[in-house]
Image (cartoon, rainbow, N blue to C red):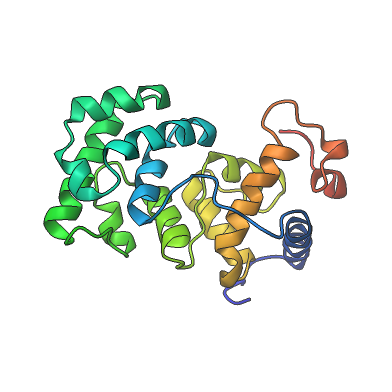
Length: 217
């Protein structure tokens, strides 16, 4: 573990113990969003903004039956995409983004999802978090996607005092070995859903919060 200057031994020990708990609870970490390749994962992640994975997984088979590759998606009318993805919310913006990124992938990247943060983040509707998911889950590059849920848990567990997801991502990367990032971000998501919810959280029975006495926040 390198690059840990400024991190107290207490916090390092806490991070180590939390990772041990997560490894025990979630030795396997299947990707929550159903997909077949980098393109279908990219579209699914775009759809997942302010929408549950369960809802996305209900909608993507319908969408991908019409177009499951950049060429076909680029030809699909935006109105048709919007109608299919309505249940995911934000359909006007998401449909334009999916259509736009499909066209750019065809025109600039030879029909293949680009394998770099810079090129991914240049696509419509793709921010750093979405690019991180694709880089880690589709291409296997070390990344630590931090959404609002991971941001909340990192603060609750005392691993980060970051005021935004960008700072939390930097803090978590400092604390955990790079070769654990891709698995760890999924483990934290699974843990949050099962034990450490935003509402109705019971610190006394949470395997992490009970151990460290972290108050409900």
